[in-house]
Image (cartoon, rainbow, N blue to C red):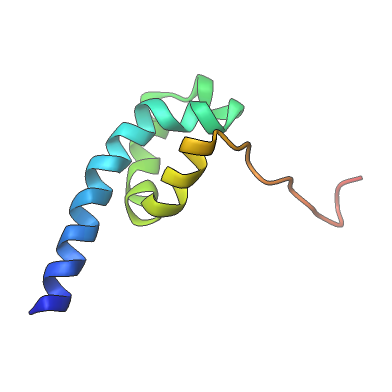
Length: 74
């Protein structure tokens, strides 16, 4: 029962954070998200709710997204 309660608390906090992050935080840490549509914001809410501790840390630090490394890009 304790584990289930902890999961519900984690997801509840994540849901609240996800909404706030989608409409304010995403554009603070990723310049590409500044022009995001409502559809984009609704799509990122579930991911932000699940990864909220990591995203909260990045939002507070205002850290930019990690550089993308790929063998296909020069």
